[in-house]
Image (cartoon, rainbow, N blue to C red; front, top):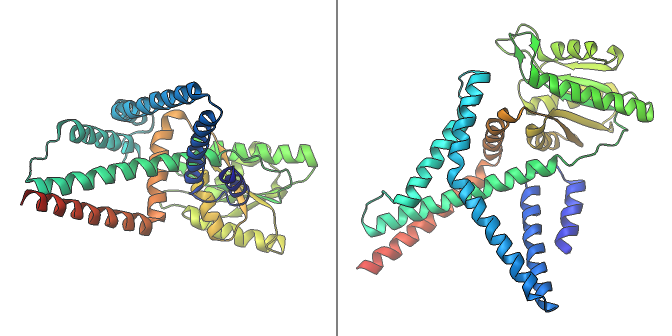
Length: 340
């Protein structure tokens, strides 16, 4: 119960954090343990057994899904190539699929044939590394999904829409168009509900292969789709999400006259969590509204976001890897002493 209260409070006040998935999963484990204990206390061991069996079945299904996930990843990479063309970012599911195949080979065939102490060290380190990778992926996915549960109040002064690159250097593509449409949808909904006109901040600079700043093309698109020119602002200097937030905040503070503006931001659903973390870093008290992403594109996008979040917390992850390496050395030494 205490964990549930803690989680609820954290989600309301501190959503812009990648630990919300960890808290949710810990809370779920605590709830399941509580149910098992409750069933035993009231003498309903049959229900406890049914719950345990159900959890075992789900666990086996997850393990089987992980083992065979390379099939989905390979198929998805082909679909992405056909729709988006060949690129490194479009090949992330292929790379992940190859990684799953290598892990499957390692687990089922154990091709490493080395002296016992060295093999113990290698297998221990790889096992811990794979387990850690799966754990962080699961909790990151949980955080991303939980972040989508957001129902913004219709009292916003500003709506920041984040750029996403232009097609042919000047046109708003499907992904960016989805973000703008979502922002306009909330803008119109707020006007209809409270008659309050928020200002829409289009955030995005001009890339080396772009003919105009993203924000200019975004505003033109928005004006064609129902936004009012008087309710628009342009931030045209940013080249990444951190700068989107930093420069938009400076623009809003100048326009509003203080740092007390009520803000929401709009981006693609897979990107809201990381954008929210960066917004918090620069002092923006705002949560994200996510626009839908084509399903075929989501696996690549989620993998990219996971990698970006790992880089954001690289010191912590490096520390964990070092600890796993040291632990594996200790196990290897133990195996060496055991064969002497």
